[in-house]
Length: 310
Image (cartoon, rainbow, N blue to C red; front, side):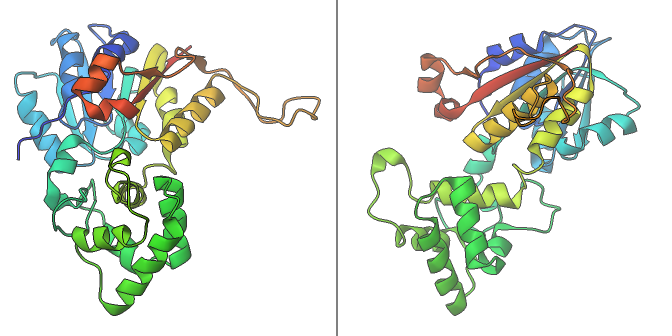
Protein backbone atom coordinates (compact mmCIF):
# COMPACT_ATOMS: atom_id res chain seq x y z
CA UNK A 1 0.00 0.00 0.00
CA UNK A 2 1.15 3.52 -0.81
CA UNK A 3 2.08 5.50 2.30
CA UNK A 4 -0.45 8.33 2.15
CA UNK A 5 -0.40 10.81 4.98
CA UNK A 6 -1.74 14.33 4.78
CA UNK A 7 0.23 16.45 7.25
CA UNK A 8 -1.93 18.38 9.70
CA UNK A 9 -1.31 22.01 10.63
CA UNK A 10 1.40 22.12 7.96
CA UNK A 11 1.70 25.89 7.48
CA UNK A 12 1.38 26.54 11.21
CA UNK A 13 4.13 24.03 11.98
CA UNK A 14 6.54 25.33 9.35
CA UNK A 15 5.95 28.90 10.53
CA UNK A 16 6.45 27.73 14.11
CA UNK A 17 9.81 26.13 13.37
CA UNK A 18 11.09 29.49 12.06
CA UNK A 19 13.42 27.63 9.67
CA UNK A 20 16.94 28.83 8.88
CA UNK A 21 18.14 27.71 5.46
CA UNK A 22 21.47 26.48 6.87
CA UNK A 23 20.03 24.91 10.00
CA UNK A 24 19.82 21.36 11.34
CA UNK A 25 16.29 20.08 11.87
CA UNK A 26 14.83 16.88 13.27
CA UNK A 27 11.55 15.28 12.31
CA UNK A 28 11.15 12.79 15.14
CA UNK A 29 8.07 11.22 13.58
CA UNK A 30 9.01 11.10 9.90
CA UNK A 31 6.02 9.03 8.73
CA UNK A 32 5.04 9.83 5.15
CA UNK A 33 7.42 12.84 5.26
CA UNK A 34 4.72 15.42 4.54
CA UNK A 35 6.09 17.86 7.10
CA UNK A 36 9.68 16.95 6.27
CA UNK A 37 9.26 17.71 2.58
CA UNK A 38 8.10 21.20 3.47
CA UNK A 39 11.03 21.65 5.88
CA UNK A 40 13.44 20.60 3.12
CA UNK A 41 11.93 23.14 0.71
CA UNK A 42 13.02 25.82 3.18
CA UNK A 43 16.57 24.49 3.57
CA UNK A 44 19.63 25.18 1.44
CA UNK A 45 20.46 21.68 0.16
CA UNK A 46 24.21 22.31 0.48
CA UNK A 47 24.05 23.70 4.04
CA UNK A 48 20.86 22.63 5.80
CA UNK A 49 20.30 19.12 7.17
CA UNK A 50 17.18 17.18 8.05
CA UNK A 51 17.31 14.18 10.39
CA UNK A 52 14.28 11.95 9.93
CA UNK A 53 13.49 9.52 12.75
CA UNK A 54 10.81 6.83 12.76
CA UNK A 55 10.31 3.59 14.65
CA UNK A 56 8.33 2.14 11.72
CA UNK A 57 10.63 0.75 9.01
CA UNK A 58 7.83 0.83 6.45
CA UNK A 59 7.41 4.54 7.12
CA UNK A 60 11.14 5.11 6.68
CA UNK A 61 11.17 3.28 3.35
CA UNK A 62 8.19 5.28 2.14
CA UNK A 63 9.83 8.53 3.27
CA UNK A 64 13.00 7.68 1.37
CA UNK A 65 10.95 7.38 -1.82
CA UNK A 66 9.00 10.56 -1.12
CA UNK A 67 12.20 12.52 -0.42
CA UNK A 68 14.37 10.81 -3.06
CA UNK A 69 15.35 14.06 -4.75
CA UNK A 70 16.83 15.45 -1.51
CA UNK A 71 20.42 14.53 -0.62
CA UNK A 72 20.56 16.37 2.71
CA UNK A 73 18.46 13.88 4.72
CA UNK A 74 19.72 11.44 7.37
CA UNK A 75 17.32 8.54 8.00
CA UNK A 76 17.25 6.93 11.44
CA UNK A 77 15.29 3.83 12.48
CA UNK A 78 14.74 4.57 16.15
CA UNK A 79 12.35 6.09 18.66
CA UNK A 80 12.23 9.87 19.15
CA UNK A 81 12.40 9.19 22.90
CA UNK A 82 16.10 8.45 22.26
CA UNK A 83 16.79 11.80 20.57
CA UNK A 84 19.83 12.68 22.69
CA UNK A 85 21.51 9.32 22.01
CA UNK A 86 20.72 9.63 18.29
CA UNK A 87 22.29 13.08 18.03
CA UNK A 88 25.33 11.93 20.01
CA UNK A 89 25.91 9.06 17.55
CA UNK A 90 25.71 11.58 14.70
CA UNK A 91 28.22 13.85 16.49
CA UNK A 92 25.65 16.64 16.52
CA UNK A 93 25.58 18.66 19.73
CA UNK A 94 22.56 20.91 19.17
CA UNK A 95 19.92 21.45 16.48
CA UNK A 96 17.85 24.40 15.25
CA UNK A 97 14.44 22.79 15.39
CA UNK A 98 12.55 19.62 16.23
CA UNK A 99 9.12 18.43 15.13
CA UNK A 100 7.09 15.69 16.84
CA UNK A 101 3.80 14.74 15.17
CA UNK A 102 2.46 12.23 17.67
CA UNK A 103 -0.04 9.40 17.30
CA UNK A 104 -0.73 6.82 14.62
CA UNK A 105 -0.47 7.69 10.93
CA UNK A 106 -3.26 7.39 8.37
CA UNK A 107 -1.22 4.70 6.60
CA UNK A 108 -0.93 2.57 9.72
CA UNK A 109 -4.69 2.79 10.23
CA UNK A 110 -5.40 1.96 6.59
CA UNK A 111 -2.89 -0.90 6.41
CA UNK A 112 -5.19 -3.27 8.26
CA UNK A 113 -2.75 -6.16 8.60
CA UNK A 114 -0.91 -4.01 11.16
CA UNK A 115 -3.86 -4.48 13.53
CA UNK A 116 -4.42 -0.78 14.27
CA UNK A 117 -7.83 -0.71 12.61
CA UNK A 118 -11.05 -2.03 14.12
CA UNK A 119 -12.33 -2.75 10.59
CA UNK A 120 -11.88 -6.22 9.07
CA UNK A 121 -10.29 -9.31 10.59
CA UNK A 122 -6.55 -9.04 11.19
CA UNK A 123 -3.95 -10.10 13.72
CA UNK A 124 -3.96 -8.11 16.95
CA UNK A 125 -0.55 -6.48 16.53
CA UNK A 126 -0.53 -2.64 16.74
CA UNK A 127 3.27 -2.34 16.90
CA UNK A 128 4.70 0.78 15.29
CA UNK A 129 8.10 -0.90 15.49
CA UNK A 130 7.76 -4.49 14.31
CA UNK A 131 11.03 -5.44 16.02
CA UNK A 132 9.61 -4.93 19.51
CA UNK A 133 8.18 -7.89 21.42
CA UNK A 134 5.01 -6.50 23.02
CA UNK A 135 1.91 -6.77 20.80
CA UNK A 136 -1.78 -6.03 21.26
CA UNK A 137 -2.41 -9.77 21.43
CA UNK A 138 -0.04 -10.01 24.39
CA UNK A 139 -1.83 -7.15 26.18
CA UNK A 140 -5.33 -8.51 25.54
CA UNK A 141 -4.55 -12.09 26.54
CA UNK A 142 -2.14 -11.64 29.45
CA UNK A 143 -2.83 -8.39 31.31
CA UNK A 144 -4.96 -8.70 34.43
CA UNK A 145 -8.59 -7.57 34.29
CA UNK A 146 -7.84 -4.58 36.51
CA UNK A 147 -4.81 -3.55 34.44
CA UNK A 148 -6.81 -3.81 31.22
CA UNK A 149 -9.68 -1.78 32.66
CA UNK A 150 -7.32 0.95 33.86
CA UNK A 151 -5.59 1.19 30.47
CA UNK A 152 -8.86 1.34 28.53
CA UNK A 153 -10.22 3.99 30.90
CA UNK A 154 -7.10 6.16 31.11
CA UNK A 155 -5.80 5.94 27.54
CA UNK A 156 -9.15 5.51 25.79
CA UNK A 157 -11.36 7.59 28.09
CA UNK A 158 -13.86 4.75 27.78
CA UNK A 159 -16.54 4.86 30.48
CA UNK A 160 -17.42 1.18 29.95
CA UNK A 161 -13.81 0.08 30.46
CA UNK A 162 -14.52 -2.28 33.37
CA UNK A 163 -17.25 -4.16 31.53
CA UNK A 164 -15.05 -4.43 28.42
CA UNK A 165 -12.11 -5.74 30.47
CA UNK A 166 -14.36 -8.22 32.28
CA UNK A 167 -15.74 -9.61 29.02
CA UNK A 168 -12.27 -9.83 27.48
CA UNK A 169 -11.17 -11.99 30.40
CA UNK A 170 -14.27 -14.19 30.15
CA UNK A 171 -13.72 -14.76 26.44
CA UNK A 172 -9.95 -15.39 26.63
CA UNK A 173 -10.56 -18.05 29.31
CA UNK A 174 -12.43 -19.98 26.59
CA UNK A 175 -10.22 -19.19 23.59
CA UNK A 176 -7.21 -16.99 22.96
CA UNK A 177 -8.21 -13.66 21.36
CA UNK A 178 -6.09 -13.29 18.22
CA UNK A 179 -8.02 -11.19 15.69
CA UNK A 180 -9.22 -7.59 15.62
CA UNK A 181 -12.81 -8.55 14.81
CA UNK A 182 -12.91 -10.85 17.85
CA UNK A 183 -12.00 -7.91 20.07
CA UNK A 184 -14.50 -5.64 18.30
CA UNK A 185 -17.31 -8.15 18.96
CA UNK A 186 -16.45 -8.25 22.67
CA UNK A 187 -16.46 -4.45 22.86
CA UNK A 188 -19.78 -4.16 21.02
CA UNK A 189 -21.35 -6.67 23.43
CA UNK A 190 -19.99 -4.75 26.43
CA UNK A 191 -21.56 -1.36 25.85
CA UNK A 192 -25.08 -0.01 25.18
CA UNK A 193 -26.15 0.52 21.61
CA UNK A 194 -23.86 3.24 20.35
CA UNK A 195 -24.65 6.57 18.76
CA UNK A 196 -23.15 6.73 15.24
CA UNK A 197 -22.24 10.38 15.89
CA UNK A 198 -19.84 9.20 18.62
CA UNK A 199 -17.89 7.07 16.16
CA UNK A 200 -17.18 3.35 16.12
CA UNK A 201 -17.72 1.68 19.54
CA UNK A 202 -14.27 0.08 19.41
CA UNK A 203 -12.40 3.31 18.63
CA UNK A 204 -11.54 4.26 22.20
CA UNK A 205 -10.46 0.78 23.28
CA UNK A 206 -8.28 0.26 20.20
CA UNK A 207 -6.66 3.66 20.84
CA UNK A 208 -5.94 2.68 24.44
CA UNK A 209 -4.38 -0.67 23.53
CA UNK A 210 -2.27 0.98 20.82
CA UNK A 211 -0.97 3.59 23.27
CA UNK A 212 -0.04 0.84 25.74
CA UNK A 213 1.68 -1.35 23.13
CA UNK A 214 3.81 1.53 21.86
CA UNK A 215 4.36 3.23 25.24
CA UNK A 216 3.23 6.56 23.82
CA UNK A 217 2.41 8.48 27.01
CA UNK A 218 4.71 7.52 29.90
CA UNK A 219 8.03 8.82 28.46
CA UNK A 220 6.52 11.85 26.71
CA UNK A 221 7.24 14.57 29.29
CA UNK A 222 10.84 13.41 29.54
CA UNK A 223 11.12 13.31 25.74
CA UNK A 224 9.91 16.91 25.47
CA UNK A 225 12.51 18.04 28.02
CA UNK A 226 15.27 16.07 26.24
CA UNK A 227 14.23 17.65 22.93
CA UNK A 228 14.35 21.15 24.42
CA UNK A 229 17.80 20.39 25.83
CA UNK A 230 18.92 19.36 22.32
CA UNK A 231 18.02 22.76 20.83
CA UNK A 232 20.41 25.60 20.11
CA UNK A 233 19.65 29.03 21.55
CA UNK A 234 16.68 30.33 19.55
CA UNK A 235 15.82 26.82 18.37
CA UNK A 236 12.21 25.71 18.40
CA UNK A 237 10.29 22.57 19.29
CA UNK A 238 6.91 21.99 17.62
CA UNK A 239 4.69 19.21 18.98
CA UNK A 240 1.40 18.09 17.47
CA UNK A 241 -0.85 15.96 19.68
CA UNK A 242 -4.14 14.16 19.03
CA UNK A 243 -5.08 13.02 22.52
CA UNK A 244 -5.80 14.91 25.75
CA UNK A 245 -3.20 12.90 27.70
CA UNK A 246 -0.53 13.68 25.12
CA UNK A 247 -1.39 17.37 25.13
CA UNK A 248 -1.35 17.49 28.93
CA UNK A 249 2.10 15.86 29.05
CA UNK A 250 3.46 18.29 26.45
CA UNK A 251 1.94 21.29 28.25
CA UNK A 252 3.35 20.16 31.61
CA UNK A 253 6.83 19.61 30.17
CA UNK A 254 6.88 22.98 28.42
CA UNK A 255 5.72 24.70 31.61
CA UNK A 256 8.56 23.03 33.51
CA UNK A 257 11.01 24.14 30.83
CA UNK A 258 9.87 27.75 30.96
CA UNK A 259 10.56 27.73 34.69
CA UNK A 260 7.14 27.51 36.31
CA UNK A 261 7.59 26.70 39.99
CA UNK A 262 5.65 23.59 41.05
CA UNK A 263 6.30 23.89 44.79
CA UNK A 264 3.33 23.97 47.21
CA UNK A 265 2.25 27.55 47.87
CA UNK A 266 2.82 27.24 51.62
CA UNK A 267 6.58 26.74 51.11
CA UNK A 268 8.32 30.14 51.46
CA UNK A 269 10.99 29.44 48.81
CA UNK A 270 11.41 27.30 45.72
CA UNK A 271 12.76 23.78 46.25
CA UNK A 272 11.68 22.22 42.94
CA UNK A 273 14.65 23.66 41.07
CA UNK A 274 12.59 25.55 38.51
CA UNK A 275 14.95 26.72 35.79
CA UNK A 276 14.12 28.92 32.82
CA UNK A 277 15.12 27.13 29.58
CA UNK A 278 13.07 29.23 27.21
CA UNK A 279 9.54 30.37 26.50
CA UNK A 280 6.29 28.89 25.29
CA UNK A 281 5.36 30.57 22.01
CA UNK A 282 1.78 29.30 22.07
CA UNK A 283 -0.19 30.54 25.10
CA UNK A 284 -2.98 28.30 23.86
CA UNK A 285 -2.45 25.37 21.48
CA UNK A 286 -2.97 26.09 17.79
CA UNK A 287 -5.83 24.10 16.24
CA UNK A 288 -6.71 23.43 12.62
CA UNK A 289 -8.87 25.88 10.71
CA UNK A 290 -12.48 25.01 9.90
CA UNK A 291 -11.44 24.49 6.29
CA UNK A 292 -8.68 22.03 7.20
CA UNK A 293 -10.97 20.13 9.57
CA UNK A 294 -13.47 19.67 6.74
CA UNK A 295 -10.76 18.48 4.32
CA UNK A 296 -8.89 16.27 6.80
CA UNK A 297 -10.94 14.76 9.64
CA UNK A 298 -7.73 13.69 11.43
CA UNK A 299 -6.97 17.36 12.07
CA UNK A 300 -10.07 17.85 14.25
CA UNK A 301 -8.32 16.70 17.41
CA UNK A 302 -4.88 18.09 16.52
CA UNK A 303 -3.19 20.63 18.81
CA UNK A 304 0.14 22.32 18.14
CA UNK A 305 2.34 23.68 20.94
CA UNK A 306 5.62 25.51 20.30
CA UNK A 307 8.58 26.15 22.60
CA UNK A 308 11.63 28.36 21.96
CA UNK A 309 14.96 27.74 23.70
CA UNK A 310 16.77 30.74 25.16
